[in-house]
Image (cartoon, rainbow, N blue to C red; front, side, top):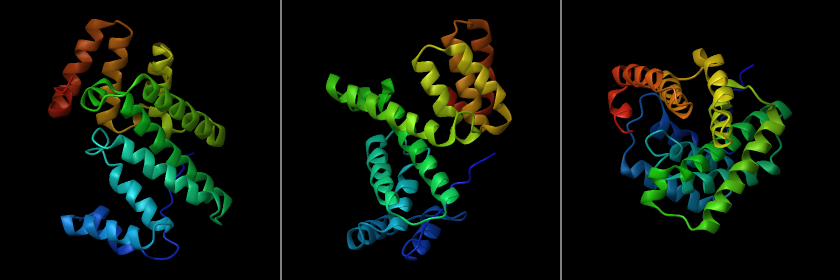
Length: 218
């Protein structure tokens, strides 16, 4: 079953900002982002504002630019959730999604193109890896494996351990529930990992036909 991510705003401080920043017809301005900063400065422990900050940072166009900031925002939000009184199922769902966002950001932080732009020392890389494993283990301990919302992080962890065949099988099993852009890219990458070059070349052609800008990045 899918775990829908709850949107929290118990003090009603974030709803107007969320609509302007992330609503279906949002066209956020610099003033909107400044207003979020001002609101957080005024109420740094507000759950709704902290979740909104995380969601604002953790958008596809920002994930490779601000992975450390996303990790920091997720960590702060998780700390606030510890003492928040919520329905058990709702709390489980929001913690799971936040751990996933944190784990995904830590994974991005390790990507070679991100490291090239913002290098890590050996100790920093070790710390990132330890945080990634911790977030992943907490997530799986909370909801178990196989949730389609979190399967891309599972695939990333399998790839890190060189379990490419298992990762491809998991990807294909969830193909209909993964956004096409990510499915096609990960399928190409896993075929490359496995050394199946003709299949990887064909997968690249399919990916490029659907998403030319993203496919040409690597």
